[in-house]
Image 1 (cartoon, rainbow, N blue to C red):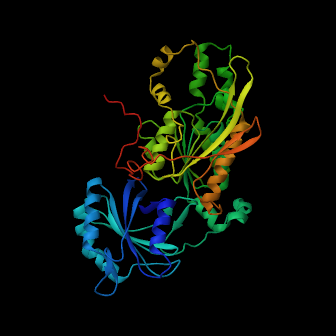
Image 2 (cartoon, helix red, strand yellow; image 1 turned 90 degrees about the vertical axis):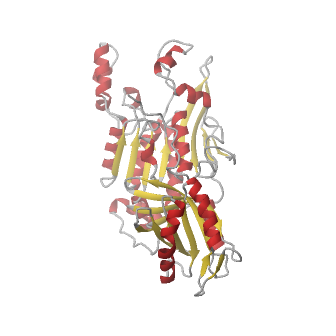
Image 3 (spheres, rainbow, N blue to C red; image 1 turned 180 degrees about the vertical axis):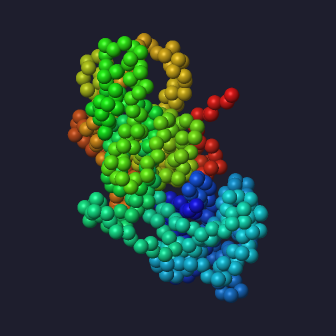
Length: 477
């Protein structure tokens, strides 16, 4: 089981500037971390960087090595014990691409960490040692086990992985040769190690699925509760008339025949899995025919490297927004919308959006993109929603066109790709792209962050498994 540390770009800059101010001296700090454990990963999520003052907190030891003082360690450890945080001591060595603990470092860990585990009672204690472009880790857990760090992940402005020693580049398969000319062997290897999730496999999500599979992503998690019907065939990639069972569901057939056709039609995740495997035989595909807010579904997103949210419900936005900041997983929320005047029937707006949500840099709640009234309505049973409609009849489908979905999907995947393989030149907070197709304008929406937001602020940021996600409660017998 791999052990990773995840840190946002903002915290990484704070830590890097403290460790490497240009004086070529040794500096120290403590990291307060949340924790997440899945079947394949254990991750420590950096919630806070606590620099050690060289005058009072990080002093020369008996053998000239600097060490954190007992008071500095104990003061922070007691706070960590109260909120269940993990403890990481940090210091730096000289060098660039390779780093390791000294024998003195390791002996100090063996002397101090068993007692520190008893004091904190959290999921782990340990240490990281950094060189300029590398990191090594020595992690201790309450079960008496000792672990090495696999990698440290910096989430933004471009995704970066630091390891103790450089990893050899793998040869590029001929299938990816042309794109490898752009971002090289290392970039292709990064994509092969990525686990992404796509929530909603309709017009936009099915395009993202095909794009990421053809790019060579190694692992994809597909989530959607719907089945294919004839109205999907104009925009869902890979869907066929056979998937929709159109000979059974067509108008004019008896009701029981149409209902049988609907039950036999393919799920959207089944179609998407078929498309992904045909595009890239080596891809690992997980499918969930359900909703992200269902018990047990959201938890499968906790160790993803990126999430594409192409579902249009406010409930899905709410859950995934919480995951982004609680587990430090970047999310792209995207979609397209066409509105028509109720009286004139004329088009009033036609637009596509791509919104990159970076942990710690504002969220969908901060920017007014989740509606409390919509959440309330979506939480009602179907029978309650029918009773409260002003107009009888079936729900009216919103207009949807594959070209508009393609705009949103292309912006979303391209931004994710360039950031992931490390060729993007990005500074500051990400802009949200709004493409107005009626007026031919591409707009950049300025985002805002509420420092007291309960969803992306300190109360939830990086807490990992310490807080439950806002999903539906499992039914009780």
